Image (cartoon, rainbow over all chains, first blue to last red; front, side, top):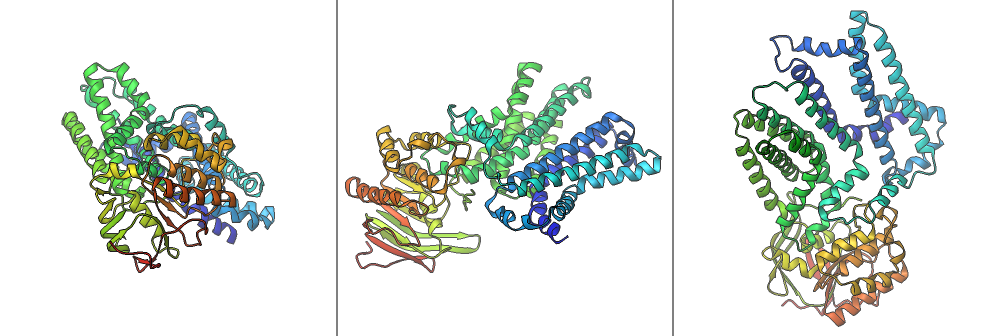
Amino acid sequence: MVFAKVLIKCFGREFYRINAGFLSASIILIIGYGLFIKSAGHVPEGQSLTINLILLIHFLQTPAITLVVCLLWLLYTIKCWRYMWKTSKRHDQLFWRYSATSIAYTRQLIAWTLFQTYLFIPLLFYWMVVLLYGLYTQHYEAPFYSGIYLLLLTWGSALLYLYRFNSLTFDQARFMLQWTRVFKQWPKPPWSLFLLELLCHGKLNLMVTKGISLALIIAFYTLFYDVDQPTRTAALIVLSISIAHAVLVYRDQLFTEHHLYFFHQFPYRPIFMYLQRWITYTILLLPELIWCIFHFQFGTTTLLIALSISSLLLIRSLADIIGQHMRRYLQWVFIVFFLSIFFLLYDASWLLIGINMVIAVLTYLGNYYNRETLSIVK
Amino acid sequence: MLQFHNFAKAYGVQPVLQIEKLALPSGIHWIQGDNGTGKSTLLKALAGLIHFKGTVLLDGDIDLKKQPLAYRKRVNFAESEAAFPLFLNGQDMIKLFMKAKNATQEQLWALINGFGMSDYLTQPLSSYSAGMLKKLSLVLAFLGKPSLLLLDEPFITLDQQAIEQLAHWIKERHEQQQINFILTSHQAIPSNVPIDYTFKLINQGLTPLNSAYGIR
């Protein structure tokens, strides 16, 4: 138990702190699905609880939904593995290899199992609610099999960590070396660096973000295909897509602060560096922008492209101002999101784009030479 | 060479550096100081990487805040422990710096050969040792035509041969190209580096330690 407690203290709390944004976004998405998409935006008074329970009934009764939830649990588990794999290489965690490894394997395995159970608290909470609801509605199969599935994921993870922390070959990121070989000869202008960083270290974040984008685009075709105001709806979807990129934007801020600090020492005009950021975000949004180009008329496409990029630049300026405070940053992102919705609902999209651009540019130029601290992180 | 007027740096409400008025003459300067006294903060501020209150003038007329580009063209910086993106290789970093600092190939190869780095320049930085990374950051700092080089703990993690090479470059660049240096170190500087002025960071200020120093 003592070993498990130390593991939780060293890794568990940091895992939740790092993934606070991801977990909050997931909860909001699930509630959003229950309240807005499932009900097509119309929630009769006093029925919000019922609608959320529909999700549970789907989990219990619809094999496809059960599979989707199990897939999401697997993705979450992979996220845990990635975190542990990466953290285990850090210099400040090397001491485990000449201390904890002397404990018997069975005791280590028990500690890692408890540790993974701690990481699974959000999944266990959902599973417990499903179990109670399953008992109440006499649907026993799905809670039983999903419980076994969770147990297997927990033990599998514990075995993986056991192997990882007792293995002698842990020091080199071979996968990354292969990736770097792919783009070894490519020119690497400043705008490309964050995109390459995502390819090397942020694949999961990138995939999840693009998955949300895809889901929003599918929602546009399936749920909103016959709405009266297609441009307004498309603007709302594009705005949501930009907001879904908030975690990537936060990563960009961290990466720039920690690893691209030297650009501030270059004799480049701030506006030149701002142009680099603009190009980075345009390329980051390229798949969604291509969708806009092929699906909408020229005027609407121009509006949607300007809206998506200006929103992304605005939330990046929030990250610049707020710094490394994920929770506060996400709170402001949601405030921006809801304020932007008002502009779009009143068909003031171009005004919103103008405000976004002005705030983003002024914030950037105002902050460029005024950085208070510099945290060079290896 | 470098003038401070009402220079002050604080982290939050905690003052770190306060230099009311000081003029550093041309030469090689060694700033000593215990851990946490603000040596690296001073160099980062002088490199233009972090904000401070007050004025810093280079060569009498280039104001760090009012002429940021002219200042950055003439001041190069090497951090104590570089944290460049690990997926890049040495060549990528060199290309970025050469373009920004207008360096020549001839200059570059003299530096690379001097440190014996040509074998691993195409390797990703993730495979570099601390010493290799230190050499790279020093090479990057020497690129271009600086009039002032700020080197933060330049001799740590280097092997003996590299220490001698760096000492030789500092001496040679100062004598032949009149490049000025500000070095920080809490350890002894090799004896073959001709230090002109020594300071110690005490009580948030720079205190001269040798008599040769005179305030202009």
